[in-house]
Length: 166
Image (tube, rainbow, N blue to C red; front, side, top):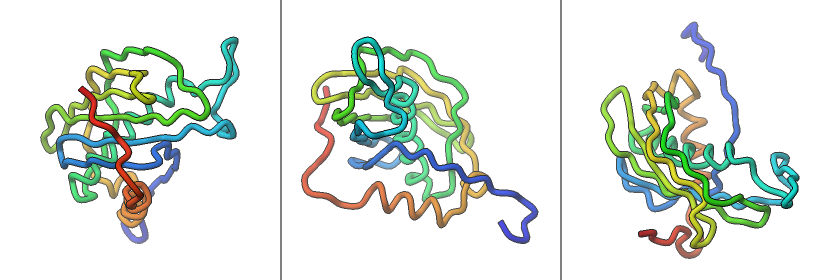
């Protein structure tokens, strides 16, 4: 930021293609279509797959964008801890990952989040609890950049993306 004496470091690893069903400070759904041409797709003994850490990152990005939008671009989360993570199956090229996230509770400094990810009707990931510090967006990114990203991931498209899960 010019003149402020602060250095803003910006890094882009946006895995979320779309964010929908946004209920501020409550819940949202994010989708990621996994392409065979993505640099992160790995080969294993049972075929190609998306690394589990990046599937988890998709869920946390959904929670992060929910917090950024809910705070009117003022806050961004930084993950402090994660617990209750359960894996059910691998994500393969061609799969569309749907991550449904909830904010369990929050205040001005912290947020507690949880979520589940699916491919079709198959649950692939469950996150019981994620604890995040809430930091001023200006310390992590320019507000203009965050606003541009939100426009990209929330732009309208035909039909709903995420189906209700019980």
